[in-house]
Length: 314
Image 1 (cartoon, helix red, strand yellow):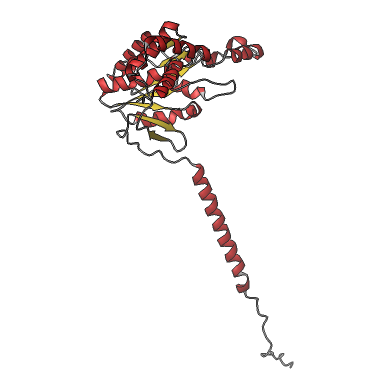
Image 2: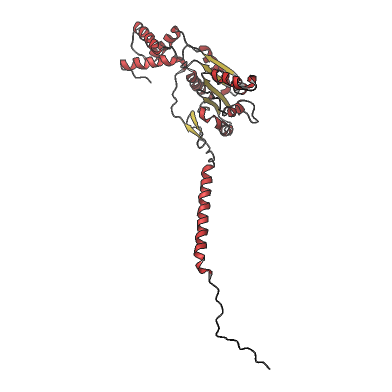
């Protein structure tokens, strides 16, 4: 009978390699992935626009809309000209004042486009009308908000904020509004004025100034018509934007008498001591050297005159 094979108890069993040496590498990889994910998350958070803070609209009567961060920046002191100093634009002044008064009272009013000659007081009239109506009718509840032409595409975001302030009324003002051929931001303005689902909130009105009645230069219109497949519709969409302003107020170059009346109005208001003959001669010479007559040129001459005579303005 065969003897069973003896088992060598002293023989060592194969020892499996411990994974302990691999753990530090795996842990480092885990921490590395976590760090990478945290940096990616932080980068994504920076890309997401912040939630607009609820603005305190009682700190000022005028604000500037800042697209970056969706903020309303208060303007403690508005750079404006008193209403009685705006000469030569009486018809436009009365029309815009009446429209603004109706809006402040909660009555129907139109968006307004003030277009025409440079330096004739388009933006000054908007700021003066706001100050006058706010003082007489709105008791500080009519706010002027300026939006820069470059920020027009963020207009829907601004409307969302203003819509949540039903106890206030807002004039959203864009100075020197115009669009280039490849500019598509006009669509945001178009939707807000008319045509969008939400449209313009009841407590918001839009005032804009421009040197162009149709907000598009003549050479640009002719160029697009000449190169378009359908010339009749080439610029119709952009041109139709101006049709969404119910009020068109045209400003034209002033006459010599109107220019002198502007100068005289400033001189009387600031009590500048100068005789009428000298004032007339100097003012006409100043306008001749500038090559134009306008409210802006009149104000520039008055600043020069006051400086020479040692009179402070303001």
